[in-house]
Amino acid sequence: MTDQTILNNRFGVAVSTEQRNKVLRNTYWLLAMSLVPTVLGAWVGVATGITLQLTGFLGLIVFMGGAMGFIYAIEKTKNSAAGVPVLLGFTFFMGLMLSRMIAMVLGFKNGSELIMTAFGGTAGVFFVMASLSSVIKRDLSGMGKWLFIGALAIMVGGIINVFVGSTAGMMVISVMAIGVFSAYMLYDLKQIVDGGETNYITATLALYLDVINVFQSLLALLGIMGGERD
Image 1 (cartoon, rainbow, N blue to C red):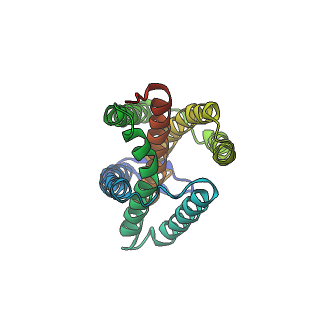
Image 2: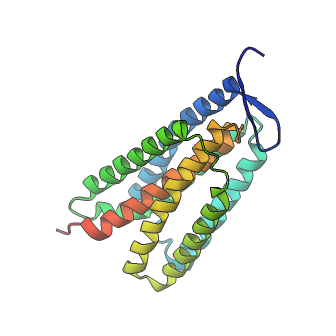
Image 3: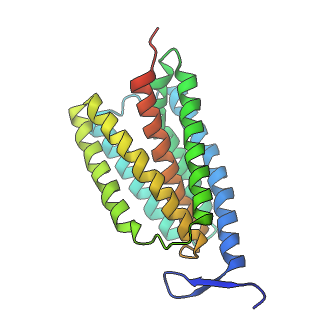
């Protein structure tokens, strides 16, 4: 073998440095590509207002049903040629679902600035976590169960707040989501770096969910705290 062999992956199979770097490189490219349909979906949603009627329980059902359906389809197609198109279809759907919040933020006088600030903040978090994943030598796999519990708590809190409609609750959930999914970014990136994740479609899906959750949580906080009405 011409290249260095690193840690065994989660299935006990040795992963070479070359293979690890290829997965990381493909993941970064696909993650960047996934932002295109996300932006397109958000633009379609804002332009048509198609998601403005998806409020309360109806919005929750559409989002949960669509997201779970796409995630299941991605898992089933991750090793085939259909994997990438299905993933990109999911990111378009997520853009559509995000468009309602974006439309609300654009209703503020400084809405465009808030969106760019949230985007810049998310990019900054990703850069920091990507840098940390390359220098931290400690195995972070033990973080997974705690992060899952945190994400589950956020999801339950978010579902409850759909019906309660508390601004304070939204702020607390947003702060928690930024912390948990920023840590998830580090965890998911470290999985790739350590050879624990060898499928770049699965890796991209995990990182995309981290990124989109940090972005929408930042945007929600900025809208609540910094939105300027005419």
